[in-house]
Amino acid sequence: MEVAHEALIRNWPLLRKWIDADRVGFRTRTRLTEAARDWENAGRDAAFFYTGARLAVALEWARSHSAELSTGESEFLRCSLEAEKQREAGKLEAAQRLARAEAERAEEAERRAQEQKQSASKVQRRAVGSRSSDRSC
Image (cartoon, rainbow, N blue to C red; front, side, top):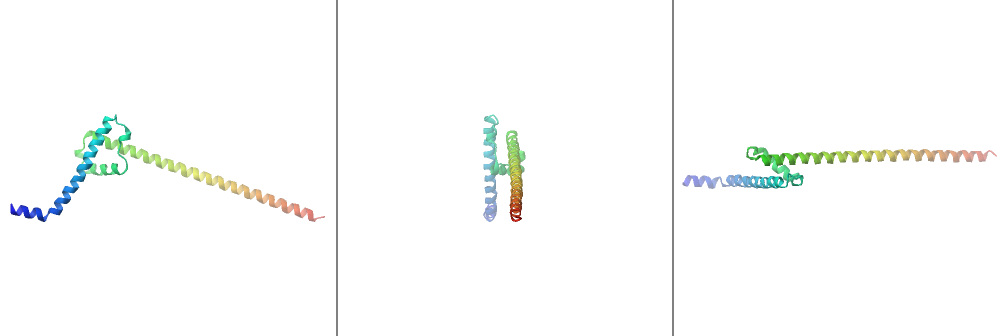
C-alpha cells in the first residue's frame, strides 16, 4: 500500500489534470444531452440549436467521443452544424451583395463625375468661344 500511495502522490499533478479534463468533458456532455432533449421536446425547433463557441466545443468533444453519443445528440449536433453553415453562407452572400452594391454606387459616382467634368469643359469652351467672338469687333 505504501508504494501505491507514493506513486499517487508523485503523479498527483498528472492525475489532477486527467480529472479536470474529464470534468470539462463531463460538463460538455451533460449540457449536450440536456440541449438535445430540450430541442426534441420543443418539436426540434431551430431556436434550440447550438451556435458559435458552444457548437465548436461540443463538436470538438464529440469528435473524440463519437461512440458515446446518443442518436438524438448526434442528430442535434448535425442539425446545429448544418444551420450554422447556412447562417454563415447567408452572411457571406449578404456581404457579397453589399460589396456589389458598393461597387455599383462607386461606378455610378464615377460616371456622374465624368459627366460633370465633360459638362464643365463644354461650358468653359463656350465661354472661351464667346469671349473670342466678342474681340473680333
